[in-house]
Amino acid sequence: MTGKTINILLIENDRVDCLALERFVQKNGLPYQLETAGTLEKGISRLKETAFDVVLLDYLLADGVGLEILSVAGNTPVIVITGNGNEHVAVEAMRRGAYDYLIKDHDRNYLALLPTSINNVLLRRHNELRIEESEKRYRTIVETVSDIIFQLDPDQKITFINSAIRELGYDPENAIGKSVDEFLCPEDKDKVKLIATRRVGARCTRNLEVRLRYKSGATEWHEMKKIAVLLDSYGMWSVPDAVVQTHGAQKVFVGTLCIARNITKRKQAEDALRESELRMRAILDNVADAIVTVNQNGAVESFNIAGERIFDYTASEVVGGTFTRLLHDSSRKVYQEKTSDFLEAGKHGFDAKKCELTGLRRDGSAFPLDLSLTRMEFDKKRLFIGIIRDIAERKAAEEKLRKFAEELRRSN
Image 1 (cartoon, rainbow, N blue to C red):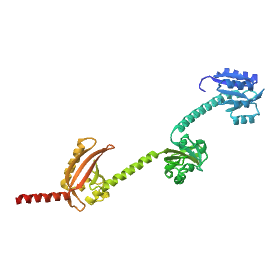
Image 2 (spheres, helix red, strand yellow; image 1 turned 60 degrees about the vertical axis):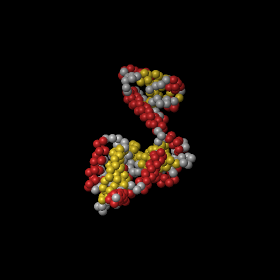
Image 3 (cartoon, helix red, strand yellow; image 1 turned 90 degrees about the vertical axis):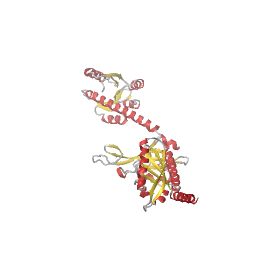
Image 4 (cartoon, rainbow, N blue to C red; image 1 turned 135 degrees about the vertical axis):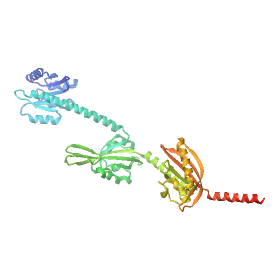
């Protein structure tokens, strides 16, 4: 098959047949290294002592039936050679694991078929070894990943599960044959109907968040991804979407392949972030000053309750619009200069500028305000945070004090 020498063990007690094969090999220059065993006992002994590429086995031997070799040949391919009229023996040999069979004829024409048969069985064995190696490699990967990988049949029972299930306190062997809902939190058991389904494409639910139950009774969140597995006359299909060419073959749903990844820490982080955002929102919504965030394009991204009260606009009316709409014409240029200074400075981290501007309420009335403008860079995104205080009352008080001081000065 590859030009290298092929080591062949010929188990044959007919010396004439042995010589005929040797002459055929020599005449055709075949790369065969032949060793002959004349009895079943010797053949078994040589197989235990030496590794051969192929065994050529005569069915009828002086000390027994040649098919006994099949139980000790292991992974060595065996080609059974039978006499004419013994086709039923060939069928039995193939059933027991022989790779091929040849039927002897009086003129020994079967020898012409031998090289093709040997090449075919060696190619088959080569492919089997590649498949075994591939399966071993993928089995190693499947058994070492931390994700739980399992397969369900159409009845939602587990047909395969990897060693990661031990993290939940279960043995993989004991999980086989059990319903998947035995490992789910009771509140999530209805979701198994979405997992073990034959649906594909847009109708298919591929990602679910479920709580898997430890043997101890504790539960943890897992993200479960699934792929429907269909079988047709062309073989197994793993179906990530509806685009599957089956050439008219009828598909049969045979199960679901699932991968479950522990996302408890992620869920905890999400909960903590959500709580933090709620706390921050509560703080922002209860401070007296308006707090507004503006992106570098001048669009408002957030607007708190105090801002709604001061400007008499709702947040939904302000967010997405320009911040300058909240300023009097006389103040817009000042604000734009302040933000331009920030952008041109190109500084990182925090920076701040304070100024007095004139704001505009919904009704068009103007009022004085203090703006404390801070620039931040967050996730490579530049933002301006403005803290706005209505200083109309303060300005009015200052004006009263000024007038009072002026009156005192004049009276003296």
